[in-house]
Length: 382
Image (tube, rainbow, N blue to C red; front, top):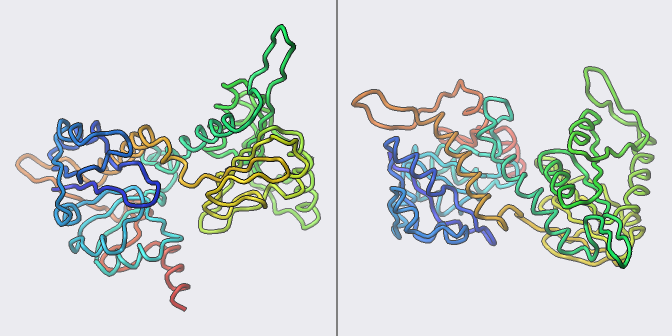
């Protein structure tokens, strides 16, 4: 079985889908690995490192896209998917809810495609959870960006010239990225506060030594779930959040809803009320942003507040982001490429009764099988 790693072509994408350490482990299992020349350059991994790990490095595009398995980071161009052989396997972040071109190309090429972001978030699949691994990178890097742009110290400083108070950092959204941002900001000495619409995550926020922002609205419902707020309660919640934001030096937003525009959590009023020189890092720029004044992919200064909206933040830490992603891929391959019986050959074995395989499937047997992707393609065609 031949597995290929093409060079990423998406703008500003510096990561690579496999690293020498994972290549070494895969080749030890009898998998032939082909890496396109220069694929690791953005992650500071030279071709020679892949060769030393047992991979073949090649300029032959036909060989790369003609492999049995192709592993990528970003969705490949439809023209590249069309070069894959019928029945081959494509693995990567394939954006099933938004990239209809990828789903259509994989369907038409009769390629089986597994989307890394669609892997079910169950305990058995934790080591394959690439969304979480890359969100960890984004949460860390968001704090580094904030510290670089904030013209104030993060930690408290006691000097002969006087005492400087610590920066106050608010993180909106207590998922993987948000929790990593809280932990990193606290390590830098900031006073940290987290907020999430899910009251049950308060304990996770507090376990990091952070405060949990209580807006004074009780939303507990049956079975441990939050109940739906009334229109009046939502308005009161937004106003309370707006008033709270004005007291922070740094706000990092991480709230995303798959396939939908990002919720607006930071109003223009909140930005106007922040102290000049404050910083907002909006990690939801790819979905429109959590701040009303965000300019996706840009750095803007509004009312004296710097608003950063980096796109594809993990690619800015390509070396470690690639290592983490490669381990996620390695774990997935461990599930779908079992060790052969003595004398047998290594091959992909997809158990469609396995919820990890079926849940991550974008296309199969010339059909789009991911419900969200199917709906998106149908909506685009109507």
